[in-house]
Image (cartoon, rainbow, N blue to C red; front, top):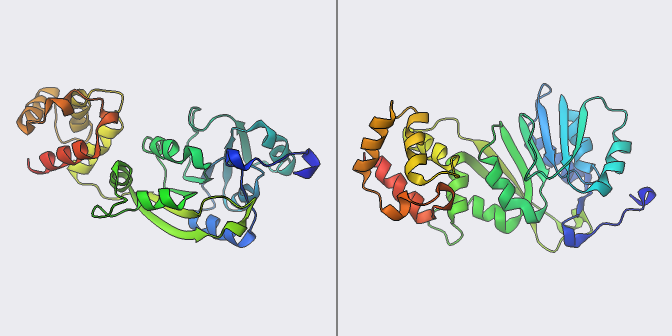
Length: 262
């Protein structure tokens, strides 16, 4: 980075993972097969990128910060199996991929996790703040359990794999970090399928999103059948008239319980 006169700005979550053993373990956690495409979010200077490239058939990297692109372009100029994209991973189109990997910038951990709920992949492996990893893997009886926990466990088998020592970074981060793995559930019951479809229609009112979710999950065959079923659930108007994306944990748990009782 010194040859490009680049200064790392810790206030912008620019800590670079530099420990080769930690990087190797992280890539091993990704479980990349030789014929798979990997999407990396926020490669920074490319330390993890280099290790991912050794495993993947093709690697797509999305980096928002323009100052890192000269480094990435120079570092991987001889590779024919990498694509570098300068854009915002929260807004841009995300190309089709098999595996998702990232030392996620801490500030986008939650919004990017929310975005994964609309993606299709075999697994996602992230480095995130320990507090966020604990929320995603929290048990329902714990104080850490939130709507994010519920969402994480509806869509994924979420596991915290290891805590990363602060000295593995340059510069050392102000918060402790962990590796987390998210793997889509292999078997879903009709309620889980319906709830996933409901969440993926967050831009609709719940009354409409739930009707569509019942049909898309193949629980109901028609809109008429779905409407009759929803009427029988007798959900509160505060739930039905809410945007699906704004449903609270209590609202979602209520819908879950009502669906399972029918």
